[in-house]
Length: 182
Image (tube, rainbow, N blue to C red):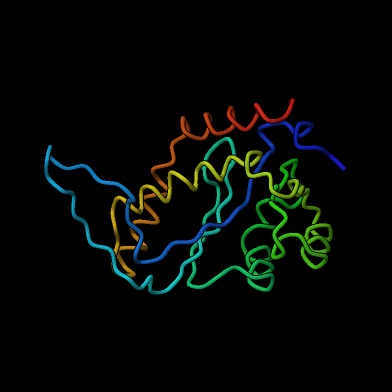
């Protein structure tokens, strides 16, 4: 089995998911001196939305948002429809964390049957995954906008993905490379 440091950087494609909802807002605010900062935040988070993304050296190569939470059945659906065609019979590696919707026998079998190279990260090792840093910027962007309806949230998600620049991605890869020898 290959180790992450053995895979050329250009072939590393990190998959992960993140969640959003309609009550996201910044934790802190600024105000003029001696004045209190005010903001509104709904007490109900509303519906939960999950965004699945793939981050490579050349950008966010895939993203898909849906209402609800990621489970094994939906992940297999995404693999069959979108992800496997991107990776089948290429030198690219699909690198994932080991959550149960990713790391299970059905997913492994499907990837192997379609000649998709894959690697699961060590448990509890987000420092090896540059998409975690991208998700941080993504969520900060959405919290700043404070979308309060589904349409605005959808537009915010799209804009947040587009805000992740190649310079950001380069710095994310450099940062995670400090945790293992390439």
